[in-house]
Image (cartoon, rainbow, N blue to C red; front, side, top):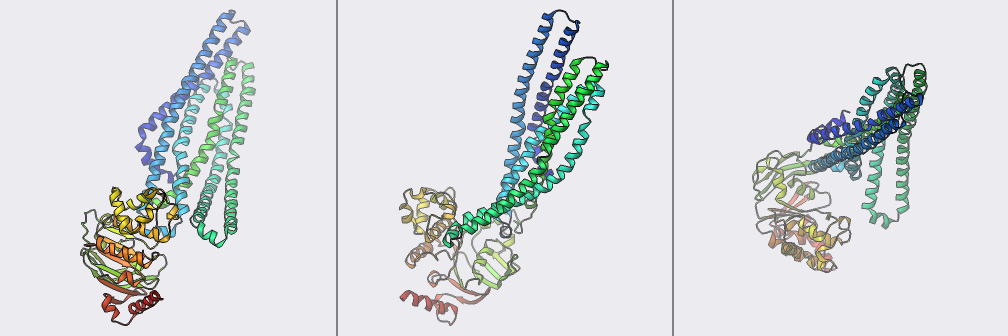
Length: 585
């Protein structure tokens, strides 16, 4: 139960609803327990008439009619309160499920980029869906049935002891045996529940990756191999669930057996006591049989509740593993930062923590507000890493990054990222309308602003060519668009934000040179007075920048502007001549 203590804050939050539910549950059970007493009374009056103690049949009929009306009335009132019980306690579990999912999702948003590199999407999804669902069963049904069971036991055993103490003791003999078996089975259920959730995460991850990479799977013609892999995982998952179900399946037969033994004890011992005059009336035996059967479901739910609690604890443990993680990137100040866009790297070095690959070595450059920088270099030279560090997706190993002459780790993280418009190398679009994908950079943007941003990224004509225009729904990751269209919509999403810093990570690689020229011309106009950094493999994208640096193995090997670098032997000039030759061909 230690892991489930995390939910105590939610129970406290909804304490009044829970207390109301508990009171309603108790009332509902009290009305339910009217029935055995009324049935016992009815049996007694019939027995008295049979013995001749009551001679007037009309008296018997009247009392039986009254008892029947009381039974029906108690059943109706008990039913109403049972409905209200579910409307309170079960609703609370839904509120807790909502809050817990939001808490997990907020934690996912807070965690740093390295967390997502070491955890699979399918597992993350499973913890926020399946695991939270298991916890909800504990927060609602398990609590409701536990209160129901406790209330029934307390009241029923009190009434039973009041009527026939010795018979009650004989009747509850099977209960300690039941408790022992519950303890043994609970341990097995807890262990197997954890295994089931782990395998379900594996299955979800495999399916999610298969769906995301369906175009690659089809292009390589490996559908059968992927299916075989999924089938193997499904078979393992099925077996783990069967192993769990085998243990759970022991609960109900065991409980029914023990309840049956209690009935036999009531009839046998109760019958002997009645014959010997130790029990004053036959109605007591009738009451006890009804009490035992009323307790059948509550006793059975002890096993079910135990199983639910064990599964919930296993799931909450998996959830807590992530909730306890501390983001490596923290916002170290609440002070508002008015970002202007001045950027300075001073002897910056950085090594990726997950691979131990050193991406940057003593990199230095200075950019004033409104200036532009182009970064060129071979694949893996550290170009994209510079953009990641400016957005503080990672913290550096050594050196200093200054934003408006303030160390970047002392700048309000929210304000810093709000001031950045970032277009990644791999354009990511959401399964939403094109308009909403562009407005992702500015949620309150007008239609005119959306169109203007699309025009500046030279994608407006493509969009209006679709049957639904800007209301066209994109497939997952924008799969319905070409690579160039996805890149241009991503550019529109960045520039509509009108940020102080614009970061473009090789975002024109999928467009032709003519379109590139149009976009660069528009970007130069819209990025006036904004600090702009362009990562590219093309000289055409870099030549108009105020500053150009060339990286190799994380180090700056060349710096200057287009003219100075062309007049120097090295990577930049060689790349220019190579691309010029390719263009002429």
